[in-house]
Length: 247
Image 1 (cartoon, rainbow, N blue to C red):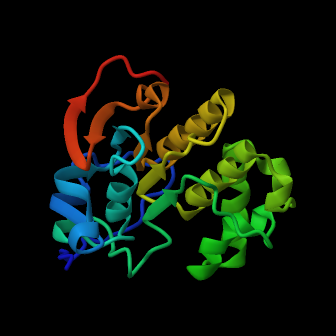
Image 2 (image 1 turned 45 degrees about the vertical axis):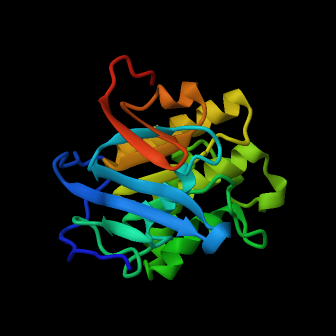
């Protein structure tokens, strides 16, 4: 069972406010997760340790099937480890406040097909009970930041893949999270569109002072984040920040 600590709560940081880089947002300690049982079981993550502090920019590189997505899901609270612990020392429990402090960009945009762009970006805010005026301001500001302001009345099937992914990033920005987890956000996009999505993620994290974790098997994407971790066969290797980051 996952064990957690009591979160340290306080005033939510405003967009653009500097991050406290000593603030520990998520910690994985000797985390493993196994899917299935017996001879059919698969160990997706093996005994991994990782810590993410406010303002971090981390790329988790590795081939498809290496466990990157599963590790991200553990950090988001979507999966429970078979052994080890995941804690969120400076964040509310994901179950208690899933829409505000942790924002997740999935491999595919995951937009609701019957809602237009504005409604898709606004949905988590409606669920969180934000006032209508706040929702409108946040949604429009977020769409502008990712260059999708003119799309707000379109339905998802009227969008290109790149446009849909930028809308998904806007949905995360509108939540004003302190931790952004992006799972292969460029994996299904062409090079130029993928780079625009990374631009939007970095701008979002900078605007909010949020930590940004991106899984990728694209070396060019990985080089744009200050810290490189690698994952192979479910085993995570963390490293120090690297020089020469491409922005």
